[in-house]
Each structure stands twice: as C-alpha cells, then as structure tokens.
Image (cartoon, rainbow, N blue to C red; front, side):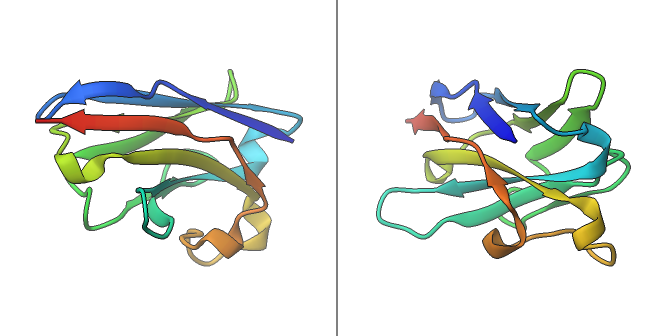
Length: 127
C-alpha cells in the first residue's frame, strides 16, 4: 500500500488549498482515510477522516466549518479542501489509511489506528 499526498504550498491567510491523497495497492472502498498534520515543534494531530464509502466524515474542532474531506474511490483519491486558512494551519499534512473493518464502530481519529501513511505535503499560510 502506498499513499502520496500532494497539493501543498504557500497561501495567504484567508485563502484556500485542496490537498489530494493518491492511493495504490489497495481496494479503495475497503479503507477509511484520514488526514493529520504536524506543525514545527508540535505533535501530529488529527484533522479529519472519511469512511470507506465517503458517506461519513469527521473533522477536528480546530478546522470544523473550514475544512472538508471527500473521496473518489473510482480514482483511489481522498481530498482535503481547506478554506479560510489561518496562520496556525501551517503544517505538514499527512494522509493515512486503515482497513475500515478494523474500526467498525467509530471513525479512526488517532495515529495508532492507521496502518498506512503518506509522506506529507507542506502547507504554509502567510499573513
């Protein structure tokens, strides 16, 4: 299984970016996907997750109402749409995947619950 995150870059505060996570080596509809981020000097934190069908999403309180997660299983991609970006959103963003059957009751929202990770893409928000 390989995950490749892309779409990061430099954006002004208030702007938008869409991150993409391309998956290979798995059957997309069998896997839940998650997004995490890690700012310099801080621990990696949960941003959001999406169920294997895309019918259910969860986002962290810090990004609720600004970020949205979606997926397209036909092309094995998950997306993180980030709007109204703030300086504190500056971080390396990672996508992750786990077989949905491992966590059938509630969406996976911690690092240890995910088995596969992408390499990260840097998002820098400037004032």
